[in-house]
Length: 116
Image (cartoon, rainbow, N blue to C red; front, side, top):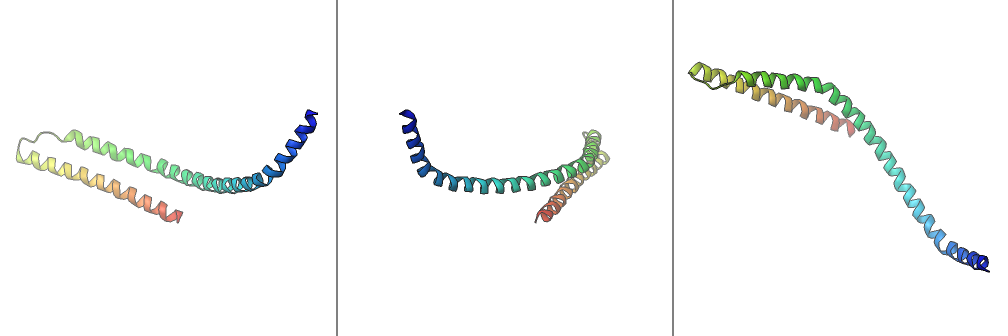
């Protein structure tokens, strides 16, 4: 007896739920496909950025070393020559920072142009 009732309930549910479920499943499959495509593109972008980072990292380390070396040479000026030398060192540090920023901006521009 319970089996007969269960079959009738299953049949009624399948008539009402299955058509709605198919529409939801199709929407889910479409969204999943779009996300998989996006993930594939992001993985390729990440690989490219990682390669660029690995290439640039030694250059950044060299510039940081130069910054530290220049920072160690800068001290309290006691006369005009020392003040001039300190100003020149500060100028070189600022120039190196601007050079590094310009280099990164150029890299970012190239990457963005490559993605377009």
